[in-house]
Image 1 (spheres, rainbow, N blue to C red):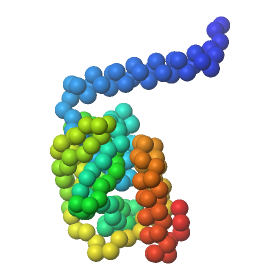
Image 2 (tube, helix red, strand yellow):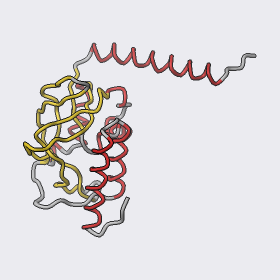
Image 3 (tube, one colour):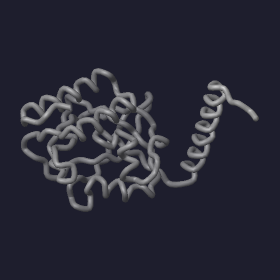
Amino acid sequence: MSVQTGQNKDTLAAYNWANTNVRMQKQQQKEPMFYYFAYGSCMCPVDLKRSLGEKTHIYVVGAATLKGYRLGFYCYSAFRNCGVLDIIKDSTSSVEGVLYQLPQRLGYALDDREGVHQNWYRHEQVDVACNAKLYKNARTYVVVDKLTDELAPNDWYFNVVLRGAVTCGLPEQYCWNLFNHMHQLQQQHGLKSA
């Protein structure tokens, strides 16, 4: 009977992770892919998995920056029963988010999650910086019919957005700014703080 030490288990886990990563890279080379810039709840790979039906953390390229836009809660989601994020063109601002390289086969499910077929969001092609490289024509989503005033997120949305931002390594100051913005909106709208 063999007994594994904690170090051997860690080594085995690292080996399994490396093999899985190599397998996924080979698979990604074989099928058509697209870049996707997420700035809201889709920054959280766990939440994105819920909609796409498979692990998405393996598709994360890294933390990314979109220049010429700013965040705002200019959309009401009946599904989430709260305000949800949107990006608005603003030459003086930038938005931090997560860049994914997703298989093309997941595009329809992503469109479905974002309500493209219901005309809630639409595709926008953007250039984002990630890992000291510029990725051109990445897909992102913008709200079609924007509200005139921002609407507060509920606690669930607040937490999933923040969890995605922190988990995927967005800059600490940006995470704090995002937290403060959502918290202030909740206070203005008389909602409980997260």
